Length: 108
Image 1 (cartoon, rainbow, N blue to C red):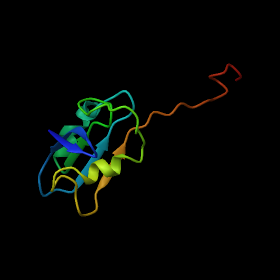
Image 2: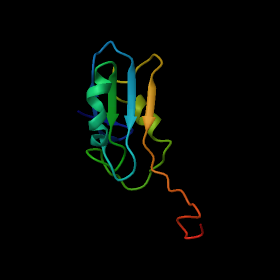
Image 3: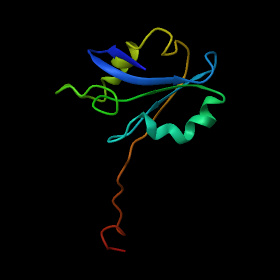
Image 4: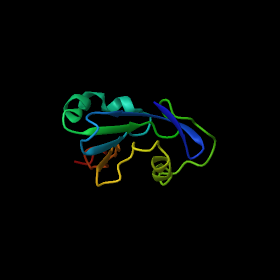
């Protein structure tokens, strides 16, 4: 699905039972919402799952400038009514982290 939020077109999906607790999934850099496909069968059995493509990824617009990790709450707040829960929910964001260890530098 697509909507306009915070001045850009945002690609998102909303799957699972409408009355279930909501889980929001955000992908990592250089990915899109499809990175969560392997988890969807298990999650949608018990949860309503909101996935979205962040700015410049997947089906969401890639405007020049204005990128910030703080922009996603504004985007989420502008999704269509009923998409974002008004009750407590869970949100998960995948982040790749590089770890510097002595073994990686050949020091062990």
